[in-house]
Length: 84
Image (cartoon, rainbow, N blue to C red; front, side, top):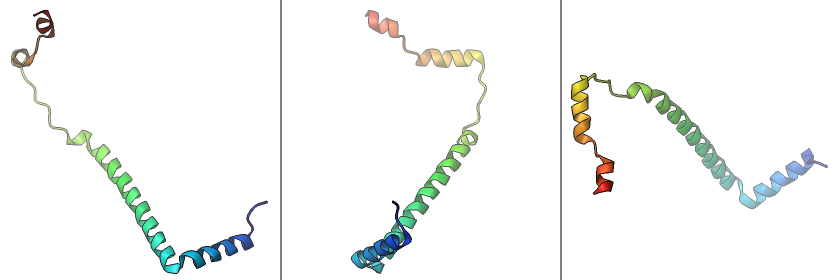
């Protein structure tokens, strides 16, 4: 017991009478704009995700002693703070 073609035509006529053609046209345009915006957003998100690894800053090599000195100056000893 599904909807036949006659039922669908009657349903569409009732919808047009209730809302009017201008309102239905505006709803269709708004719905189409929303779908287009969603697709563009998905495409932009995919483009940004693929560009992210290539957009990283180049890695600079630092000597071992300079790296150790820099990390030692910025390192916080957690155990020393908890004992005091």
